[in-house]
Image (cartoon, rainbow, N blue to C red; front, side, top):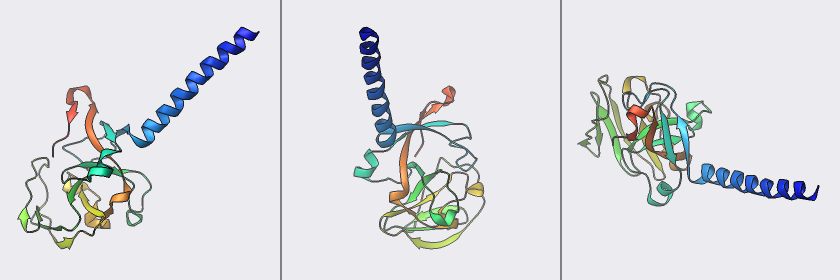
Amino acid sequence: MKSFLEFFWSNFKVVLIAAVLSLLLRTYVAEARVILGPSMMPTLESGDLLLVEKFSFRMAGLERGDVVIFDPPPAAHSRKDYVKRVIGLPGETVEMLNGTVYINGVPLSEDYIGPHPAMSFAPLKVPEDSVFVMGDNRGNSYDSREWGFLPEKSVVGRALIRIYPLRKIGSLPK
């Protein structure tokens, strides 16, 4: 009987340590996320699986072009996580004229988006500790144009690579 208890206890400790390490890694370092919806097409499609890192951007900051997963702000009236691209950084002025995004008056080169409607919005200055995010599918994306700036503290992580489907494995365009 003693050997069974020793065997059980030693295996229980291994499983417990593995579970705690897994939980810590998923919570603070990286996790996989499935994309749902068309707002990031053509870059990402519904069903794509991304590896999302949660640590380095908190120290180095976000960059324009980063694809981020975030808790939507209250004005979005949603509790599910969103995925969008960082377009405007703190202190910058963002505007759109006939479908072209301008940052501080300079047109933004966006090779990652497909055909988009000739939308426009007036210049907006991004507040400190916030970013302006948009989906790559500009005609079908609920983003900062509707609900405003995204507080940086709402960002859960930055997408590093697409890991599924296997034929599309690799980094995401910026």
